[in-house]
Length: 474
Image 1 (spheres, rainbow, N blue to C red):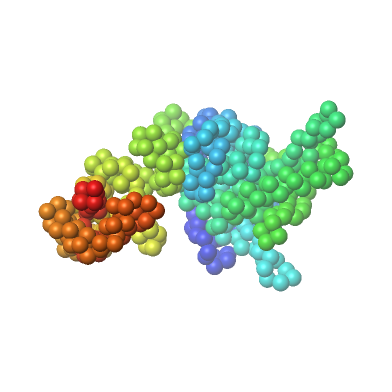
Image 2 (image 1 turned 60 degrees about the vertical axis):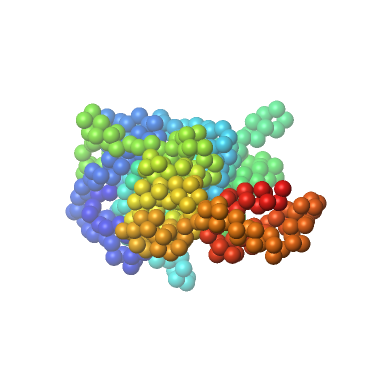
């Protein structure tokens, strides 16, 4: 945030450091302009008011992973405030969020910039180690109002925030790599004997997955309720505390009592000038906004008739969503294009460790392949083969690949009728079962269709064969 050190996950400990982020005497911070612009972009996406004037503050506390003994943050004049984010009330598995039900607005109190601290490691025996590679990394802290009422709602918020920042190109937002962290603050309002009691607030740390986020909250809700019923302890009786999440035992563990704002002794950072946001600067950042994932997902359902699930898969990544729309605009049937992307090209992309758009296949070729399936030129099975081969040879069209590998379906009714007649002649018992009706009829008809497909080596158009069979067997 205030120096030029590289940000790199998994680098050798303390190898991505410099005198500034190590807090050496006499060094001066220099503000990272791009980090400010990224933060403003997210603030706009969160419908926040962006401050025309903001400043930096020192947040003082002593901890081994904080070399300067203070963190440069923002206190009374944050970068942005008073926003909201829309989340679905019914959440699917990440990165899919269901939009079939209602949505809910979660209010944003503020989104401010600061520098991250380092990382303490406790795996080396009876002592701790400190890795300062992460120290000084730009960190956008988003603080919500207490508008969520379950672990599921918090998970929905987390999924939506991840999709949002990825769409904006601000962060890869990988929780397991620490690119994105959630620290839920949990407490209860308990009504008992006509009076309301508030339990002490607990902040939960050490969460590295959406699953851990949801489960830790559900556990903490029950733990606080049990503690209140047993001891009657309320917010007035104790400070806010920090608890860690033990993923193996699936329980929270007390870490320390939490400081209040006055304990941090905030005061304006003397080595940095305030940031003044001009209308021209703000307008330039605003122009980089895009259609956000939840809105795009809802539009895919209404405009293209996709299922909630499929629309969620397509909008998990901005480039994939845009690739899909390009293929549809090129003439591909939306549902056929969706199936090709989510079932075939996504699998190939995962194997190569890239996005669908980065496979190199033109959206127009995907549209053409979808049309070939709709027109009965190739089967759905053959289309998977063509999709794989199209990635291996980017210069060939789907038609050329289909011809070269003999994947074009036989739709000549006259030719197929002769094969059907031969199959019917060879399988009189199956014919008898079909014409006789009863339980065996459906199975026998499927058998006859399978025999035709076998004789044509899978190249017969099932629709045409089915029509001929119906005509013959009636």
